[in-house]
Length: 242
Image (tube, rainbow, N blue to C red; front, top):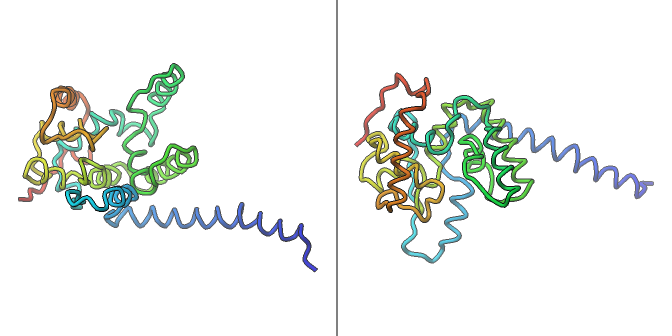
């Protein structure tokens, strides 16, 4: 005869052994597959589509492009704007995290604690939220993509899924919608403007910049010259696309 205690043990075993094991195996499979397969849909894209149901003026624009079809200027602009130490860290900028914690204790917030790797993990695998569970999963997936994908693939995915305007995802769609050209042809200034809008792309328009956005883009441009170019784009020729 099965006891109540036996049932509880089985339930606990499923919850704390089988479920975590299945999640681990599935997540590793997911990460490995996306090292090679383009990411066409993200949780944020789904959320935005639901938010704007009934809005005839809202349209999702995205177009996957391999990194060799995206301007080097775009790569350097997002590193300068979002993650100066992209090539140095293992997914986490601990110095920036410490500063953010210190500022938050004083009731102030700064942008920049989240690396490109963390943003990519969040965009691809998770729904936006401010819970500790989401933060923990973000750290888990960040470690996974750093280990399996590497920097070049992380940058490629980031530049294809990042929200860069209202309904605009990725460098190719942003270049087409905002500047009427392909991502491979983006100038330093255009790339810097797109990067400057990234903290709040729903409100900032890189194609029609305010004085503040233009000023911020100029600062990004200056920083682009001071950051060492990653080896994976240094000697690469960008394939032009009309």
